[in-house]
Length: 424
Length: 201
Image (cartoon, rainbow over all chains, first blue to last red; front, side, top):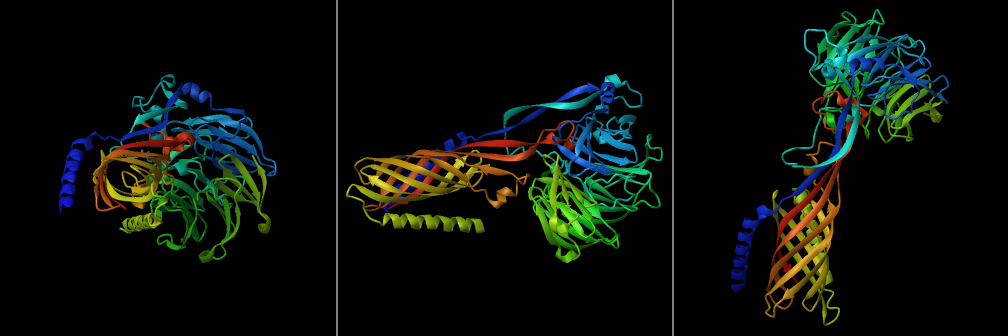
């Protein structure tokens, strides 16, 4: 009894002490990150600088477009590399088109369409080593037109008064941080969607006329229209006059759009919470929504053929997703798409299909090749782990793959012997 | 709930290990195995959190040295593993003691805590653990005693993840640029009051 009394007495004293002094105990929490400072150039100078330059080293490969013997590969935010791929075993980096602010592109014939921040720029690529800038369509992607934000409305401005960000300087900084007040910063973007693209060999138009773009591209051409997606809108540009694209119409999408993929007269728009299917046959300038397939919130490249859509979901943080899987959806009736089967993967991004074979970039698990003859039981026939990969175009027996450190090309003409033939 | 059960089982296992080692009798008349097992609270800016520990080692006269392991739920769950040194004062059976712990803190973040992560590649690395304090032992017989202690406890953890460069005022377009992601780091230096109630045998 005495012991219990003593114990209680001391516990009481302890409680008093804790009450008095626990408030003095502070957590010291700091956050270390980089602060980026923009480097500016006036708009007139910036536009002059958009031109061909000698080839430069690939550092941050982004999206790619394949036309004829050439690969056009974006260096995210900086421009486009032109690669002569006439010999896939020995591709040559032949020139670089300097386009600060560039992310996406599409090519029809000898005309290249590329974004430069909020502008759409048209190039003549008849000579890929000496690309000519033909036209600027200013401010057609308003949410990326940062340098127009301070331009007075009502048209007309002096290009020498507008500043464009052409680069960044970075410095490390450490600041006090309160995780209870400021949760980890979320930008609303999709980190894993920034450097991925893929495609099917079966593009909408004959090879050589319209370049093959990727499943995560945001530019796509069908016939005489260039379709672009930005944030939550799908826009159609009339390119019947190749060097003078004109905005013909746009539709709003109630979701954060990620990718656009053309197949015949249909457009498949991958968004953060589903795939939207549009028909452009009747009104190409105003795509008509004909169906949608909703999935968990995630980044989602998509490709399709006549009967099925193949959707990869990945846990791109900014898409707020936690799924890493392939979904196969029956789209024979687009107004009523039906999920056939889901396959778990590691971190799937771009994908491409050639015949009965599906190529999936599965992050650091490498390139995976599946036999799709039985969709309810896909057979993995090869896994190539040479690099962390994000993008693939499988075309004519060659799989062109974007890795974090360059382009890898695989010969799959003999499916029992898929092998690496080059790396650039 | 499952995690709490796992933790209790984990602690029971440690306790059992301690009991077994304590029952391995005396090394010599001067050196004796002791096991100290405690539960307690960690009090600081982020509120109260549960902790439990088991320390097993040898006593020599008024000194004790041992190896400890525990569970620490303050902010993010972790497993401290440390060396423990303590000294008792006084001639009476009930004694005042001081102790010092120094070791490593191994992160073992709960699934629930992970759910709050925005970034899937978010992970924690290990850091320093220490605990310094004073206590009182109420003797319950020859080698048994109830312990109450109060101390200052410190644990360090580092969280790293692929975050975004702050994009203000242009949040939408920067997502497209290769440099938009970067490894960011949060250093947690956590200072707590450590209150423990234990049983020594």
